[in-house]
Length: 404
Image: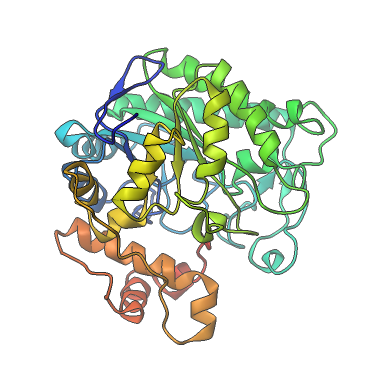
């Protein structure tokens, strides 16, 4: 049986010190020109001291013209490499591994955020109410797809130069890779659309380009949906096929989640015992041939230990429990019967409670306060957090946020 304190050696030869992973959460701590703000090194130093073996950054965009939300950090050239280096150094304290999550939003960006509009596999609008939040994107040409692959490779190479311990390609939650994988959003008739073999071509080609850019001894991972959980979307069986393909290519870590803006299962779950996606993760691990992480819904030490001992995953990903308690991992590792105080945030104001804005603003506010060394409890008033974030970023930025 795997213990939470056991080290894990990845296919590239790098060893992670234990089986706990800090999942990516949006920090919205980029400057006006998209450099990392000083709060990011401080925040990740705190998580590194908290004992978690592998820390994943919030999404870092590969193109300043393609932001997913206000406050995104972008790594596309050398301009801010010193700032990224400070982030890498502080997030690698006490033996932690800090990986950069690389992302492109595709059409999943608020209307008006990107001056040149958005791009996607196909020029299809989002269904229903999401069409008001996200404009219909322009379809990418094949040459543009190749250019995006090159951008991911360049950003990965720069992350390595800056001192990060690895990179992860974000192919879940409805972003660009996820849009290519989904037959609901990809109706192309060329080599990047139609069959699953074609729909996963962009992801696999980009993985190959990133691997070539960073070399065989540098960790490269992928975050993948177990399913989109919408009719006509990316299915579990298709996900297993992509898992096998990534495994054959030696992917160092496949992190499994699920859902998109249309169906945010990464936040809601389905009530499964042992985390939101643990049952699927167990199936994926049986065919992957490489380490698998499952993230979502893990709130107590017993559930984490059970997932590892029963073979659901090689690592367990934690998000909000580490915001509420940066020492949560250390307590789990010490054998404490610890549980998290993560709970739904309610203000009594229906539009706020049902929009997702409140949850995002509250956790981003807490991350800022953690970076300043403050202690924050789960009882902190949601409306005060929203007021602080609005005062800092402006109402337009706060209310043009993604829902998950």
